[in-house]
Image 1 (cartoon, rainbow, N blue to C red):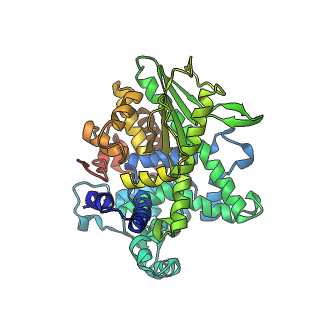
Image 2: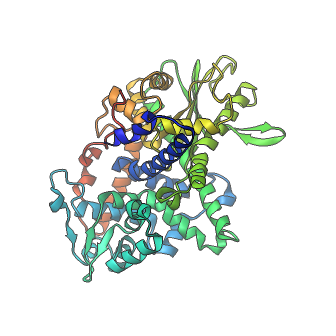
Image 3: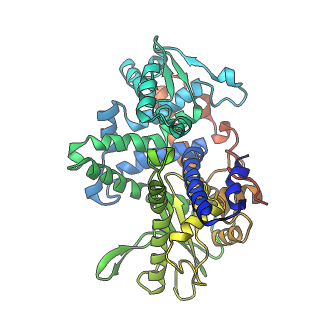
Length: 476
């Protein structure tokens, strides 16, 4: 059904007015589907949140010092809990509600967690703070939903209050999980939005709310860039490619007497060069729910058009010899594969959405015969490509095969699912190593408190069931 709905706008007859409206509505739906339905596999999303917002955020010298944001301190001030605790106990509650049990029926998973349950896991004061942070009463939900809007679009699409507080808190303090996906979002991508809200109220972070939010988003960019760099480097260490590949980060160079930066990650495997631009931003709430044409265009410009245009400019400067990534001997003969990696939220790529993007890209973009077609992928999709790299595949050849297929204007995930078999517990080396380290720290923390760790912490990620299916199935 989803495949038919996404394909329908391309099949309808085209008229000047109807075609314009159709593209607009299709673009708005792509934004909605991307922000609501592209939630990564649970172990991956835990690693993304913990590595970026807890580990890398506390790494000295990462990014511009003037943009530094002490996220753990902000979390303690705003929510009285650390981010690390929020992720850990979100997982504990997810397990307790039987949301991770593949054998449990829907009714069996609707477990009402008793009041004071967390007292056996954490100190009572922390348990109270966690419960208030993660749950809401019926009246609190009513107020949140009323405040967000009463249009059909808001009623149908805006479930942000559930993602902010995924448990219903009863009068006696018991907790009922309303949506496993909402809880997963709360303990992963929800951290981004909670910390953005915390930044708004920090007078020490900037003169105005806009200044504070901008500082926070600038700080998050290098977190995602370093994560992707570490991720790619580790996969190429696991499997030495033939010919050898060099993975390097961004490098500064002079452009019109000013300082510029190369794309965030470069993977050189002569005669090919993969240039990756990482975008860590998220989609605004109103743009996800009931966007105006202006908001759709603004969102897609930030998410796709502007980033692809920037990537095209950097490639032109590469051929001018303004910078040379590690491992590249001759920029004139290299074959460049541009990749835009959406490390925040993805979008539902369809032919009609690509038409929208191409309408606004500068004429001649990516038309140089030395440049392959641009690839847009999510972080989850890129990690699956790295699983194939660790098997011995070549990234340039994978990208070339994808663009030669019938899937080239659809999400990369669909081509991977149709061409390769990747088991649920087969994840990129860096992700698995980070997951093991994170859960080991969790076990130590729970053991120190004398609390039993969920059995899911005692095994590899295979305990989480199958990976989510493709959003758009076989386009043929």
